[in-house]
Image 1: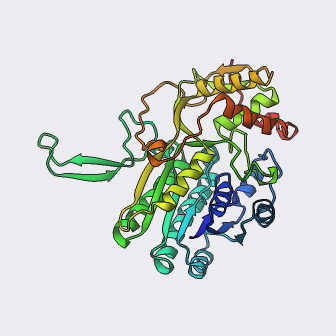
Image 2: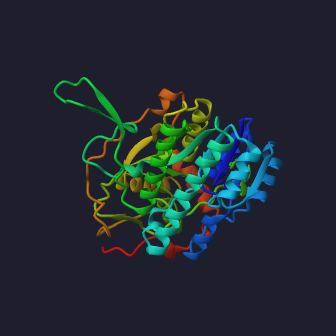
Image 3: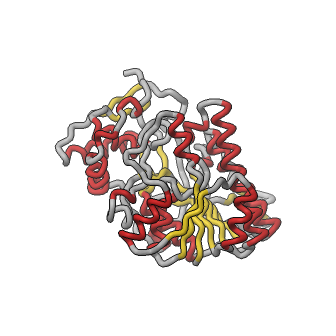
Length: 385
């Protein structure tokens, strides 16, 4: 198929592009380096010096064989988006072009507005351009399980069925399960989900919303070939995530920062599991007129559990790691109900990559090779002991 990967300079977008190109698809990568710009403003840096997209694509072709076509442009500009889709008429689009930092979205008014402007406008422009110029195209958006928040009831796999009379249980109606995410980032993702649902129902948009857990890790089949193909790995408190940050802290000799008792539980999957889920969605496209929603994750872990796993893996490398527990800066650190339904990856014919000691050790070895790039002052908030 001809596939557009939007946000292809990003942590998920770049491995996705390589994975799909290696699977034999004609891949066009699109980005405008927005995330590089805002991370620079925050003083964040990646663990590696990541080449720009044209250079990355050239290295990928040299090392792995397939070619990619590169388009640099701003998807919030409807003229660029419309002309791109009109010219290429893709069979599928993988939408990774929403800025993914929850912490950045809560820094202030300007940051919040920039996230809303980018994430909602990009999704809106893509939807309209697809409907006008490639109506059979399958739009696959990378969602976030965090959009649901932490409700006190089980979260179904996307849709909630409500009977008209709970006593009779006869007629019923399906609703998109309520989204109560804790940050503006999650709110923007939820708004995009509503747009997809509306245009699927009213205009026959063919779309899948892959509600993913926290994605961690570095290594995929393609990035293992050449370190210049590794994704832009952020490890700080604004643009990193807890697994990647703990691994960087372990290598830098900084105590793993666990807030409260570390009982807060979330869904997780390695980057390779995300790639497999995206390929599965491409091979099993959604039907017209209904947004397909799939909660996808490999396992649930608490923060303290992750810290202890990283500590154990580092110990196998003769690296001594301590865990520092302190007061929680928010109300989100206590133990709480967390029951997220999903289709197990095994039921999709996929083999999940779990957060095992072997997995963590392989990632730590890569990080250790670039330990001199880690800025220790970016690794943790100040917490009370």
